[in-house]
Image (cartoon, one colour):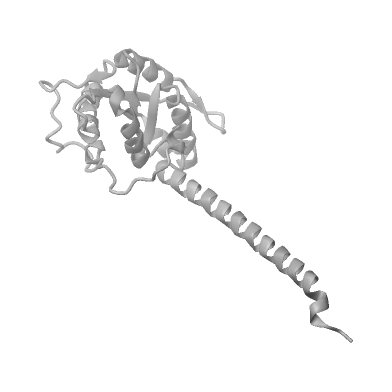
Length: 225
């Protein structure tokens, strides 16, 4: 006759195996959730098209680079819209991703702020020379899949971040960039006696001067490594 106590070791073994399986599943789920959370945090810091830092990513980078007193740069592409209108948005995206790849040469952190506007924190001792080299790099021809070769140039403004205020430094660099765009003489360094970023009647409504430090930043810095 069957007696339940005779199968007690087997029942205990089955219970232990079940508990172990549950624990393994829980650990796997926890690892999966952590990976998903890391991916979400990473995505929150990156521009989805180019893979460069976005506004939040640039701000996050600033929290780590501020002690080195980098120069802020604002980079606006000249001639992008006609190419985008003539060859289509897909070609425009290829051009933007190509320029983004070239911006990876910056010693610091490069970011796409939106449209054809980029920014960077430059950690080189001579940021003006770096900006000149970067302008030449950006101006190299880009071959599209349809065989056409296109080319854009860049207006670049620079400003020091010594005041410890990233939005202010970017606003100053933005003002210098407009001087560079108007003069066509190459990158310009912000000069408070010449560059006025308090009036924006002739400028787009949303520019880098509107960059604000996000109230809630992701804690990971992997996206800007």
